[in-house]
Image (cartoon, rainbow, N blue to C red; front, side):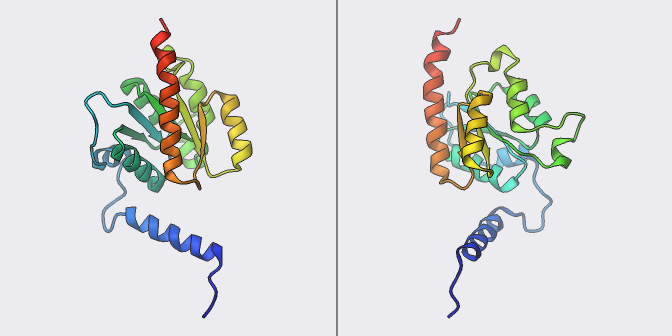
Length: 184
């Protein structure tokens, strides 16, 4: 019997996980369709979370995880869509990917990344106190340092347990509520 190396097992798991969410014969779903297909377990006044990521697997898995835990979830797949949706929907918290590939990031004239989206949103009064969790697959130490320095509430490394993201979202919302209640 051939021993299974950790990288082989990891890639098999990733292929299996991606297979769960890949459409069989349908074209790729838009972010609005992904959000609409997520089960709704939303209390009447549940917090709204905007998840922004170019990876449809992470986007759908995160939307499902948050929706199953009582959040209303809206999604966006790039920076310009994120800004537009955020200004229109005014979410209570954002989960932003840090890195977007050039073809997605440069869809317009602005090369978006999570730091630029965060900086842009902080210009508006509606988003000065909105908690933001930045997410990436990159170096967790450096990414955490940069995320906190940029004004994010927390950083989520995508290889961590998805329950950790849920804990970060809940903690960020809990910390934001007293600040929002006392602001004029």
